[in-house]
Image (cartoon, rainbow, N blue to C red; front, side):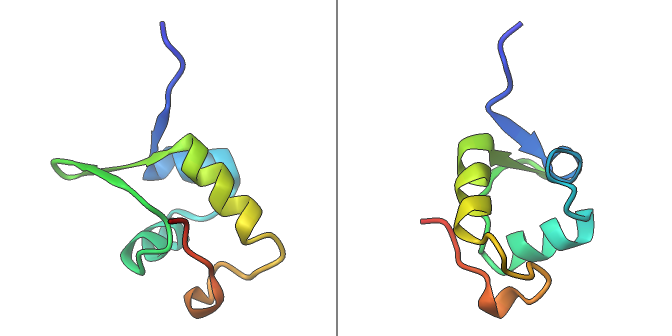
Length: 70
């Protein structure tokens, strides 16, 4: 079986330790890029890792100070 290249919101929370609501808020604020498949939101793992590096040391709950991944 191939390794996953994208994660659902719940999987992002498990992978990073970030709360599900915070992940959803980051998606809603367009700070974290997603792929939408029906009602599911998928986050590419490479984009997620880039996002985490870019926002190291920043409180992700304060979405105004969070940098978005292009």
